[in-house]
Length: 205
Image 1: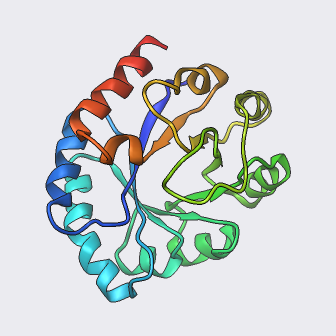
Image 2: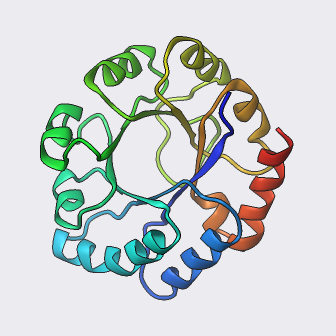
C-alpha cells in the first residue's frame, strides 16, 4: 500500500497573487502534482498564466498537469494532461505528448470507464465526486468501495476527487486512494493551514 499523496487543482482564477499562494501551499507540505485548470480563455493567455506556476512547480519537483487540453500541454511542455471524457483519447495524448507524459482520465463513478482508461495506457484514473462540491456541477457520485475495488484489481494509481476536505478524507485514504485531488478546501481559505491539515490526516492514516 503506497502512501496517499496530495494532488492540488488550481482555482479558475490563477492571476493576481495566485503564484505566491501556490508557492506557499507547496512549501507547507509535500504535494505530488498540481493541475492547471482554467476555462474560457484562449490558449495564448492560458500559456501566459501557466508560465510562472510551472516554474514554481518545477523548482519544487511537483508535476505540472494541464486540465483538458492536449494542445496546451504540448505547447508549454507540461508534465502531463488530465482528460475528461470529452477531451480526446489517451492514445492521442500519448502520441502528441510522448512516452513520459503523465496522462490521467476522469472516470466519474464508472468501473467500465476506468478499465478502458487503464487498458488504453493511462497513468492514473480519477474517481468522483465523493462529496458535494462547489467547484463544478456534480453529475456522478462515487463511493469509497470503488477505490478498494480498483486497488485490488489494478496497479495504476487512482485519484479521489470532489468536495474532499481534511475533515472527510480519512475514509478515502483508508479505502485505497493513491492521491487526493483538492481545490476548494485549499484555495477557499488559508492554503498553508489547509495543506498542513491534510497532512495531519495523511500522516495518521
